[in-house]
Amino acid sequence: MAARIGWNDMIQGMSQGKARVSSHRRRDAFPPNWPMPDMKKCQDPDLPQRVSVEDMLRDLQATLPDASSYPDRFKQAMTPWIDQWKSHIGKEMLYQHIRLLIPGYSNAVSSDLKVMEKPALIIWGENDRQVPLAYAQRLHREIPESRLVIIPGAGHMVPFDAPDQVASALSDFVGRL
Image 1 (cartoon, rainbow, N blue to C red):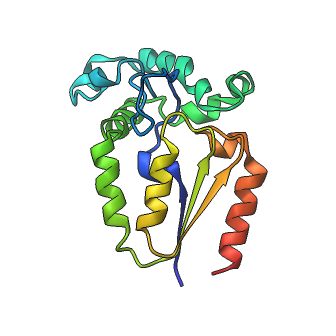
Image 2: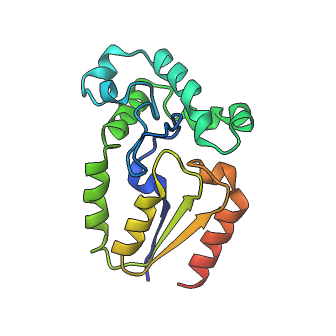
Protein backbone atom coordinates (compact mmCIF):
# COMPACT_ATOMS: atom_id res chain seq x y z
CA MET A 1 0.00 0.00 0.00
CA ALA A 2 1.38 3.40 -0.98
CA ALA A 3 1.48 6.25 1.51
CA ARG A 4 2.03 9.99 1.47
CA ILE A 5 4.44 11.20 4.10
CA GLY A 6 4.89 14.88 4.81
CA TRP A 7 4.72 17.72 7.28
CA ASN A 8 3.51 21.26 7.09
CA ASP A 9 5.85 22.06 4.20
CA MET A 10 3.91 19.56 2.10
CA ILE A 11 1.09 22.06 1.99
CA GLN A 12 2.97 25.30 2.29
CA GLY A 13 5.70 24.56 -0.24
CA MET A 14 9.42 24.89 0.21
CA SER A 15 9.26 28.32 1.78
CA GLN A 16 10.39 28.47 5.35
CA GLY A 17 10.95 31.15 7.98
CA LYS A 18 8.76 33.31 10.13
CA ALA A 19 7.86 36.74 11.31
CA ARG A 20 7.28 37.90 14.84
CA VAL A 21 3.72 37.15 15.81
CA SER A 22 1.78 40.10 17.05
CA SER A 23 -0.93 39.71 19.65
CA HIS A 24 -3.61 41.03 17.29
CA ARG A 25 -2.90 38.52 14.50
CA ARG A 26 -5.49 35.79 14.09
CA ARG A 27 -4.23 32.36 15.08
CA ASP A 28 -5.24 30.94 11.70
CA ALA A 29 -3.62 33.67 9.57
CA PHE A 30 -0.14 33.63 8.10
CA PRO A 31 2.42 36.20 9.26
CA PRO A 32 2.58 39.26 6.97
CA ASN A 33 6.40 39.19 6.86
CA TRP A 34 7.15 35.51 6.38
CA PRO A 35 9.06 33.93 4.76
CA MET A 36 10.03 37.22 3.16
CA PRO A 37 9.53 40.80 4.28
CA ASP A 38 6.34 42.35 2.89
CA MET A 39 4.48 39.22 1.81
CA LYS A 40 1.78 41.25 0.08
CA LYS A 41 4.41 42.61 -2.30
CA CYS A 42 5.84 39.10 -2.77
CA GLN A 43 2.52 37.91 -4.19
CA ASP A 44 3.26 39.94 -7.35
CA PRO A 45 4.07 37.42 -10.13
CA ASP A 46 6.48 39.92 -11.74
CA LEU A 47 8.51 40.53 -8.57
CA PRO A 48 11.16 37.85 -9.28
CA GLN A 49 12.23 39.77 -12.38
CA ARG A 50 12.81 42.89 -10.27
CA VAL A 51 14.66 41.26 -7.33
CA SER A 52 18.22 40.01 -7.51
CA VAL A 53 19.18 36.58 -6.18
CA GLU A 54 21.48 38.32 -3.71
CA ASP A 55 18.71 40.55 -2.31
CA MET A 56 16.35 37.58 -2.01
CA LEU A 57 19.00 35.55 -0.16
CA ARG A 58 19.66 38.47 2.20
CA ASP A 59 15.93 38.61 3.01
CA LEU A 60 15.83 34.86 3.62
CA GLN A 61 18.86 35.02 5.90
CA ALA A 62 17.08 37.70 7.93
CA THR A 63 13.77 35.83 8.33
CA LEU A 64 14.53 32.11 8.11
CA PRO A 65 16.21 31.61 11.52
CA ASP A 66 13.06 32.76 13.29
CA ALA A 67 11.19 29.71 11.96
CA SER A 68 13.17 27.52 14.31
CA SER A 69 12.69 27.17 18.03
CA TYR A 70 16.49 27.59 18.11
CA PRO A 71 17.16 30.63 15.87
CA ASP A 72 20.76 31.18 16.97
CA ARG A 73 21.65 27.55 16.29
CA PHE A 74 19.80 27.64 12.98
CA LYS A 75 21.80 30.69 11.82
CA GLN A 76 24.93 28.53 12.04
CA ALA A 77 23.33 25.74 9.96
CA MET A 78 21.09 27.56 7.48
CA THR A 79 23.29 27.38 4.38
CA PRO A 80 21.87 24.03 3.15
CA TRP A 81 18.35 25.36 3.66
CA ILE A 82 18.90 28.35 1.39
CA ASP A 83 21.31 26.82 -1.15
CA GLN A 84 18.37 25.45 -3.13
CA TRP A 85 17.35 29.01 -4.00
CA LYS A 86 20.82 30.36 -4.98
CA SER A 87 20.01 30.68 -8.69
CA HIS A 88 17.54 32.47 -10.91
CA ILE A 89 15.49 29.26 -11.23
CA GLY A 90 15.61 28.79 -7.47
CA LYS A 91 14.45 32.36 -6.99
CA GLU A 92 11.52 31.78 -9.35
CA MET A 93 10.59 28.59 -7.48
CA LEU A 94 10.73 30.31 -4.10
CA TYR A 95 8.49 33.16 -5.24
CA GLN A 96 6.09 30.64 -6.81
CA HIS A 97 5.79 28.90 -3.46
CA ILE A 98 5.39 32.23 -1.70
CA ARG A 99 2.45 33.05 -3.98
CA LEU A 100 0.85 29.79 -2.81
CA LEU A 101 1.18 30.78 0.86
CA ILE A 102 -2.27 32.23 1.07
CA PRO A 103 -4.87 30.65 3.33
CA GLY A 104 -7.33 30.18 0.47
CA TYR A 105 -4.85 27.98 -1.36
CA SER A 106 -4.11 25.94 1.75
CA ASN A 107 -7.82 25.48 2.37
CA ALA A 108 -8.32 24.27 -1.21
CA VAL A 109 -5.44 21.82 -0.92
CA SER A 110 -6.85 20.55 2.36
CA SER A 111 -10.14 19.79 0.65
CA ASP A 112 -8.42 18.06 -2.27
CA LEU A 113 -6.23 15.84 -0.12
CA LYS A 114 -9.16 14.12 1.53
CA VAL A 115 -9.79 12.14 -1.66
CA MET A 116 -6.31 10.63 -1.98
CA GLU A 117 -7.36 7.41 -0.18
CA LYS A 118 -3.88 6.68 1.19
CA PRO A 119 -2.52 6.79 4.73
CA ALA A 120 -0.98 10.19 5.45
CA LEU A 121 1.36 11.38 8.15
CA ILE A 122 1.16 15.02 9.18
CA ILE A 123 4.07 16.19 11.33
CA TRP A 124 3.72 19.66 12.84
CA GLY A 125 5.70 21.74 15.31
CA GLU A 126 3.80 22.63 18.46
CA ASN A 127 5.28 26.14 18.37
CA ASP A 128 4.89 26.75 14.63
CA ARG A 129 4.12 30.46 14.36
CA GLN A 130 4.23 30.51 10.56
CA VAL A 131 1.58 27.97 9.68
CA PRO A 132 -0.83 27.74 12.61
CA LEU A 133 -1.58 24.40 14.24
CA ALA A 134 -5.20 24.86 13.20
CA TYR A 135 -4.13 23.92 9.65
CA ALA A 136 -2.63 20.65 10.84
CA GLN A 137 -5.75 19.86 12.81
CA ARG A 138 -7.92 20.61 9.80
CA LEU A 139 -5.80 18.42 7.54
CA HIS A 140 -6.04 15.62 10.07
CA ARG A 141 -9.82 15.97 10.32
CA GLU A 142 -10.31 16.07 6.57
CA ILE A 143 -7.86 13.41 5.40
CA PRO A 144 -9.15 9.91 6.08
CA GLU A 145 -6.44 7.56 7.36
CA SER A 146 -4.26 10.48 8.46
CA ARG A 147 -2.15 10.55 11.57
CA LEU A 148 -1.19 13.85 13.20
CA VAL A 149 2.03 14.01 15.20
CA ILE A 150 2.59 17.30 17.01
CA ILE A 151 6.23 17.68 18.01
CA PRO A 152 6.55 19.43 21.41
CA GLY A 153 8.83 22.45 21.43
CA ALA A 154 9.39 22.46 17.65
CA GLY A 155 8.73 25.47 15.46
CA HIS A 156 8.08 25.54 11.73
CA MET A 157 11.47 24.00 10.96
CA VAL A 158 10.45 20.69 12.51
CA PRO A 159 13.18 18.55 10.90
CA PHE A 160 15.83 20.96 12.21
CA ASP A 161 14.29 21.51 15.63
CA ALA A 162 13.51 17.88 16.39
CA PRO A 163 15.20 15.50 13.93
CA ASP A 164 15.02 12.48 16.25
CA GLN A 165 11.30 12.94 16.88
CA VAL A 166 10.64 13.36 13.13
CA ALA A 167 12.63 10.21 12.36
CA SER A 168 10.77 8.33 15.07
CA ALA A 169 7.38 9.48 13.79
CA LEU A 170 8.31 8.49 10.23
CA SER A 171 9.63 5.12 11.30
CA ASP A 172 6.54 4.40 13.39
CA PHE A 173 4.23 5.45 10.56
CA VAL A 174 6.00 3.36 7.93
CA GLY A 175 6.15 0.42 10.33
CA ARG A 176 2.35 0.45 10.63
CA LEU A 177 1.70 0.38 6.87
